[in-house]
Image 1 (cartoon, helix red, strand yellow):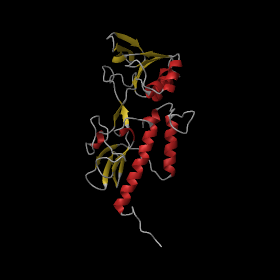
Image 2 (tube, rainbow, N blue to C red; image 1 turned 180 degrees about the vertical axis):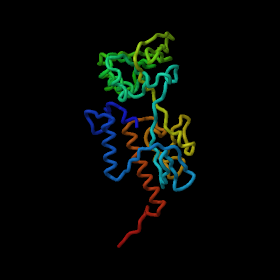
Image 3 (cartoon, rainbow, N blue to C red; image 1 turned 60 degrees about the horizontal axis):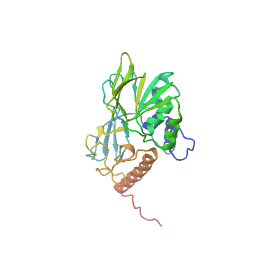
Image 4 (cartoon, helix red, strand yellow; image 1 turned 90 degrees about the vertical axis):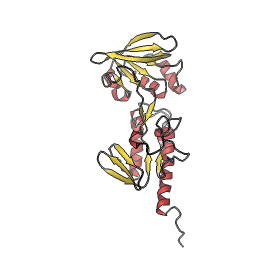
Length: 277
């Protein structure tokens, strides 16, 4: 998920010096496998929650399940401006950890003002000689400690109250058109790459409308991670949650797992075992 693509995680309990997303992901997977979890590298293409056991279809095979936990998270939201699709992979990126190395001694733009945008802007200063951080407001939304580190980094230049309206170039990206949202003034910013961090879109398309979604496409859940289908639960960023943090995703994952276990126990009649002498 997105955690694995995050360079530095500063706010997860137990790691006072921080930890990379890839390292934390590997530790979590190792711990889960120690308790018997089997990890299958495949993509879910569809589900059928109208029958029980539920059916989960992937490219490789079809699974049956007594309970399902949906933890598909969310994917980066696109700007939706001219040139974005054209230059994706040729200057436009949504993952600084993946592509930052290719911008040694170059100039890049980061779009966004939250934790992800600011953290990845700082990460890119390891390679790029100049990082423009373009944000549509006059203040950042990132945590204070993250903001302070960015303000102290001489390679980062903040471009306030501005949005990217067009991405241009030839063989690859060469510049971006920037518009000040307060004055309406437009300018061209020369850059070799642009990294976009303006929020996320929930990965719920494969559900085919079989569970209730809100107007933005996130899964509607109750207090205990139940969806509109009994036996189907949701956890993490795919839920209708305001706060999208690793800690809250882990907490909801634990809740969903407990509720799924309880659902199966009641289904099998083992929820309240008889006492033995």
